[in-house]
Amino acid sequence: IITMKTFKSVSEVENYAKRLMDVEYDIKIDGLMYHVNPMDVGYKFEWDNAKNRFGVCRYNRRVIGLSLPLVEGNLDNFTQINDTILHEIAHAISVHIHGRKGRGHGNFWKHVAKSIGCNAKRCYSSKDVNTPQYKYTLICDSCGNKSHARRMGSSEYSCGKCSPRKFNRDFLLRVIKN
Image (cartoon, rainbow, N blue to C red; front, top):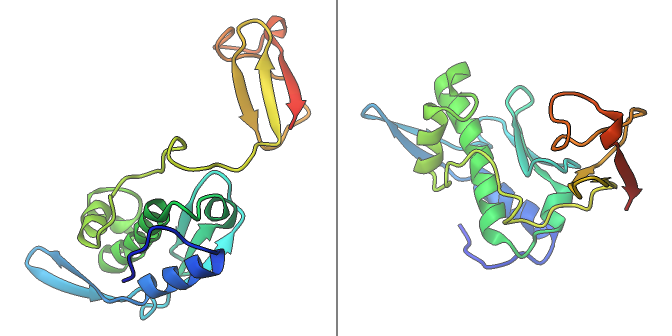
């Protein structure tokens, strides 16, 4: 496993992910040692265009995927990218060992994640990564609250702070296309 501070390109990230996926991980559970190589059990790597999550493990298709927009915006964040890859590998290994009980972010997954060097946290923090630009900004002219949206429906929206329980035309959000 290579240790580096930054990636130069998405192809470098892809190559790194594939190398991590082609490692035999040793997981000790209840005195038994499991040796699992994600590629040997059928997993492959792919990119997607997600903007709300960094990675995904698709158990049925045996795919570990990364968000191309998030990776492109965070090539200098080796720690986040590395941990995301390990996080998704932990999902693959947990399901391989435990079956359906290994899905999600429960104790089976956490044990596997920690065993392979992942921080075993469920999600990334948007404070720690560069997130893709939202297409729309929604502003409440009453309180100044701002929120963001990637797409807009045909509905009008009201401020959740000024009118938290139901839609209220007095607190309509002004939409700005970024």
